[in-house]
Image 1 (cartoon, one colour):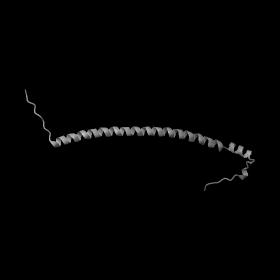
Image 2: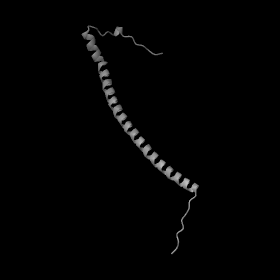
Image 3: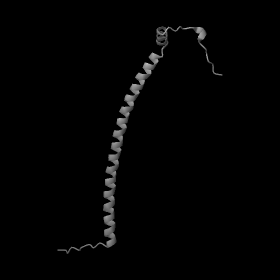
Image 4: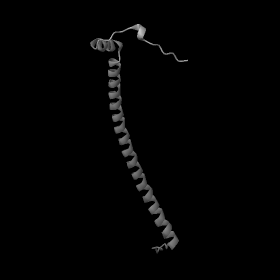
Length: 97
């Protein structure tokens, strides 16, 4: 039988080994933290997309309502209700020079 020899490590080797283990653990933890932060940010982005989509829908309906209220027929109807007349002589055309 051969006698097993015990390998002795120097203090600097032990320090390097411990540093390497700590570095690997730190990289693993930071990777998990980064992915969790990225996931949280993606969730917030998706929530904001939903809010933006709803607001665009509201804006579109308001724009349609404005266009409806600003239509010539609606203006003429309201003018007739208040006793106003449509007269071409009163209309001024402004030209850009």
